[in-house]
Length: 453
Image (cartoon, rainbow, N blue to C red):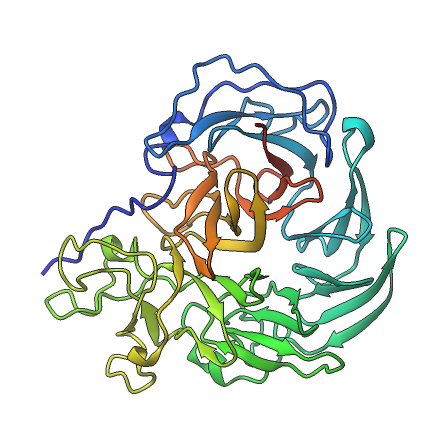
């Protein structure tokens, strides 16, 4: 029996789009855009042709003074018709973002231990940048509860009083989170970056990634790793809200109040179906298995890692089986749970939605976008371990009646046909002006993505 090969045709724009990447774009001399002040229009010097999935080539507008690499060459992206993309700010290694109550955008810089503050300029001027916080330990996720700013460092959650553009009175509200300095990990920790969000109940919800690709001991650690932790108001002791979440970097609350996570799933799973290839790690199988998860979390939910994997094949074990992306059952992992004794995968609730395997989704947010409606937006970082590489993009999942629709590409085109990339989106958050602000740690940029008509 041969391992199944699949074409994932559900994406809106990535298939067949890479060859259209190098379209001529133009640079603006008007300075950066700001909320409420979109960039000046630019002339497109080549005919606009739609991809088979309906996306069109859109030049990236680059204001004067922001043309350092990769914008020293013309860049274009793929968007639905009527959308524009401009470079709003240059922020090296920009990661997660959150809007402050005063209308400034905060951006985490874990590599330098800083949080940057970007104040939108007046009348189209570039945002003013400053360092809000420094000397932190790999700051990543940030969240506000009124005038309190929470910052997820690799080993703790810290709180600050935020007022007048300053964060003061630091206090540690959740200590002793696992990172490479934890004595029991002895420097071996692959997923130190953490995300924090504030729930409708004012509890903190914190993503804690797994130690490694396969590290079952995480499920019994204190505090538990590969989990989403909940910290009730007034407490500094986390409790497990959901487990078996390998690396749920994306965390966001939906309009109905449910918490969703976007998960980086495991790598190099063995072929799980009877036959001569049983138990082998086959590149053609690994390319599409297991998919990355987009899951709604309820108290006590288990996403199965590392014992169970979401199963995208409609006819598992059959060559050329079609694939599905929503309401997936779970299959036993033959490397960690071959006889099902570790966890009965059939008892796990179906997985609501997925990204393609090895997509590496990171930031997650909900937004109401013009022409698209409500939905989840996610920064997709792109694969490092797939042939051909899964391309980076900003994804949109429509939301209706409490259900998550299929993945669509909102902004693509960051990857050339040879697999090289000039950008890697991390997160996308809606701004006060209705546009999306997208961080890109590959290009060192914040983009403003907006509907132009």
